[in-house]
Length: 249
Ligand SMILES: O=C(O)CCC(=O)C(=O)O
Image 1: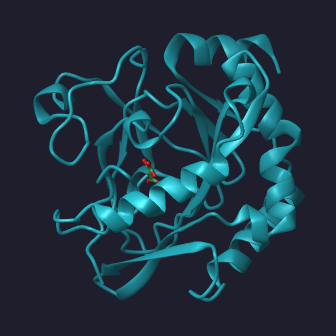
Image 2: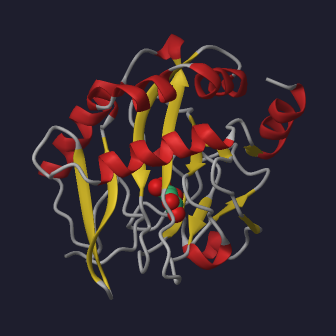
Image 3: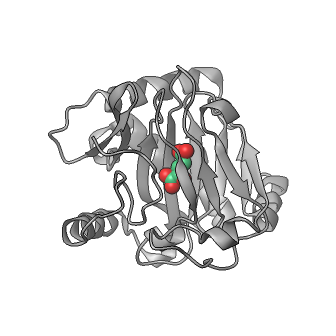
């Protein structure tokens, strides 16, 4: 991993990389298509939102046990190496999701991921763009130089409005195959997909291997909390904070 990439991440809390050649991106797109078409019955998790075009898949999670090529890609090679370089020590996969943001799909309120991630304080995640992620289809916006602390939150677990207004938000367009890395305390948000084309992205999250392989415990805990916490915000619950703005089906 080149030192410029690591320095940018350490200074700003995010960095954009381009590790994949076109044929790899094509394969990745095929694998995401496969998961997208899996049935609801299974140990993986599919979530749906209501769009103006009807109910649409908005997220899949917990798919690496059931998809060998995606498992290999997310748990070895350049992604695992980069996660380790950014954390400064060997990394292990903490969780994984695909956000589909299909045409008409909703965005995400300003938030940090750390409050939703149990057991350890520090994680790095990346957004692997499957389709170009642009301003008009809801690319991520990040706040640079702001990952020291968990910020004050509202009742949804998102960043309090008064704080959001003081932050400097930068849209980061990510072309298909590029990878946007960010710290779990880097504030981020995204708008809806106003276009007629889908904006899919895979998001693996890593923690320091020295803190343990927590992936199975994370999903067990998430399902436990989903079962026991009443959900009252009127949006689809996809996370342990209520950052997703999608309407329930
Ligand atoms: O995919 C997006 O637009 C935003 C994703 C995000 O912030 C999240 O899933 O926590």
